[in-house]
Length: 238
Image (cartoon, rainbow, N blue to C red; front, side, top):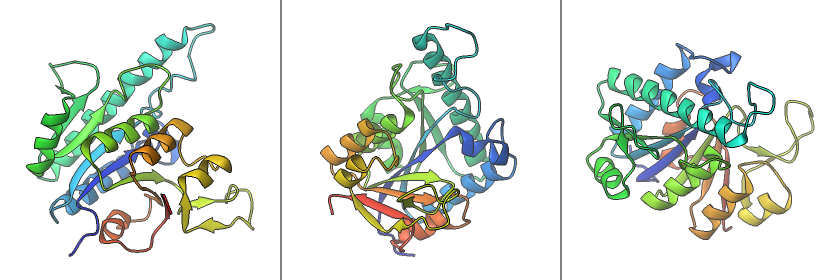
């Protein structure tokens, strides 16, 4: 099947790995998303994934009163590495090669992130799962996704959500919510549409990385996206 995008960066939240509950590890979703990633990789698409840790721990929700924000963020960063290893295992069970690369060195379980090495893995057809965010507190995994997408020269950053695009208001609460097919980066920022945090949107705008927001719970959606089908909402320069 011909593909529109040769290299993609998929942003997966940790909550998605947790299934309906949003926490822990869902035994249905994880193998399915791994299967879809392997499927598009076998079509010749180079695949990178940035993964969150919200199903395990989110730094903005510190478990103890008065916990230092930096400490809490570091705990969240470690949660993303657990998820990255989980996804790597699921991909390998599908018979495809995968590598976990982390922004904080932990050589016993993952490779340190080195841009040139990441590019080599992608060129060799290996799915690269980026863990540990940017390696810094105060930065979200959305920003990490925008950063890695820019660094590896991704042709699109796919933001996986539970809704089929970007709406003018919450479609789960408002029946008259209107879905956008296309938006500019500036429209997303000025209307505060909540696609990703402002730092991530600005980074994508500066590096001309389009963002495709779609409902990852639809089976086959990644296949449709890389083929260039009209799915989700595309955010670009316009």
